[in-house]
Length: 296
Image (cartoon, rainbow, N blue to C red; front, side, top):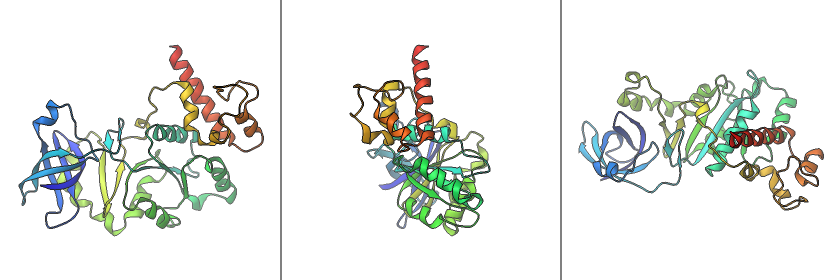
């Protein structure tokens, strides 16, 4: 019995990466019928035990799904250690509302997020400082990098090492360039994975884990917009705003929404410059959206 990680699932086949030992490689597996009977679906990212059918052809059967740390619905993936969201500092100008939605989605899943602003070589010191001010109290790690010059890439590599990371970002942010800059020589080793899976034979995008180096995987999401915010009560929203935590319980009214009520410590902190106005405005926008959704 071998242990490995599912890096892709398509057409009823699961591709399991075994990283170490004489039997290391990528195995094409079918799942046992018992999984279907028990309504257990293997996910990309699952750690599994498998039985080898043919060691030369690298085929096998999934025998057991090991316990999950977590799982996401969209994209469907398990055992994510952290999420990396990549935006450009400029060209294009970052959509901070979209970034805040991503952070909310990850916060609800209790998945730590790393905010990575690429193209720092194009930004002025003032533009960088503004983004630092917006997100320094967001509870997320914050990096400024340049795929073009290599600035900050080593620090990012250190944050990824030994973890499974979901990578997301809008088009134009330089995500592919940055991921390639991360991998260097090791990145080329994923060619065997692509060949085995036969990426060109399938037109539908699926979640896929890519081994970068030992015990380090990244997952390219099948579309940034699919990391969506599920239905939630508007009153829950403030629980995912770390900037509000220091003022919890200090407002005049119990259950203060931090929007309309007088005597609100969060609004006072906003006026005093202790809370980012951009982050607060994102909160208000999301709150109103959730309120309208419940109405209809």
